[in-house]
Length: 377
Image (cartoon, rainbow, N blue to C red; front, side, top):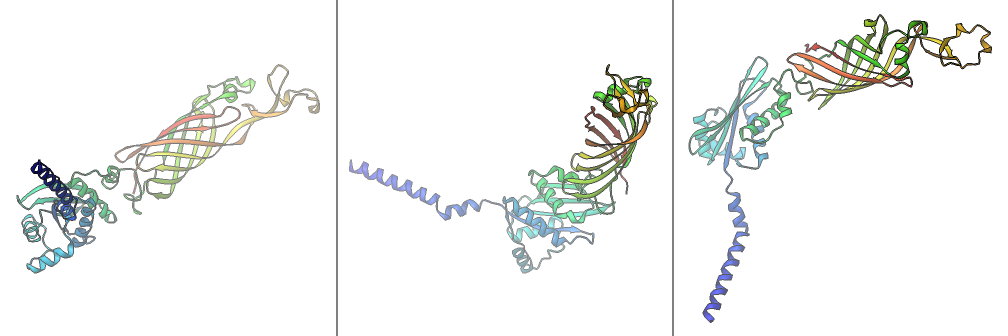
């Protein structure tokens, strides 16, 4: 019985010792040592805007953010390379990278190069396995020539090299020349103006629609309350930051020409456009010339002009008012318009599609327009 008790006690003591060892700092250090050592070398670049050593340092910082490797410190790398009389500044090829990585005791090495042509950058990164002496992965991405965004380019290429999630919208903004413009891919020398013709229709509601549908001898326009429009939009961007643009739009329009009606109008809007997908919203005043007349509704509810009252004007018992009337004279009419839209892109061609609404106590109107324009330098 004593032997059994001693065996149990010894077993428990051994278990506690193993648990304590597993939780000790030494055991934790062994776990962290499982990270592979990686050497980040300089990135070869022939363009004057970039320096190989600076590019290598940026890439090293981005790899350290992954927290997946033990990244060899650049000062340690320079010290050891100098000690072995090796030249790190001109080490860009596979053989040189393997030799340097072996001297540094690295398991992996990353090197690369940037080529410049036709206002584009081709960034190539290579992941080399030191033990097998093979290039495990190669990532080649063609970017727009945007020197100020080189850090973003290195980060995106690095994340793709290691199969990590990356910002696809950011990648699109610095690789697609005809992508929606923003401060990243739209420099001061290149701007997009969405000026261009606009075609669409306007639909009138309520009392206004009823008057338009009436015959002309009753003061109507003998027309359908659905009218075509044609105009031209001018716009000016005054803010272009992050995901949004702010702009002022000026839009002269002619309405009703398809039904022998001439209604000129001018709309001024302040708008906001979302850079990533082309959605926008705008609002502002609209001014139009509409024929109006002074008159009254008689006892039967029929609209009559003041000139139709045969007696003295002060003896007219019906309330006097003004409304749209084809027999009247053109007067300036003001309203407020709210519009939303989306720009559809096809290469260099932009196709803006917008819907709008103008509220009014007489029923208001709504409509849709679309146009086209191209990217210009």
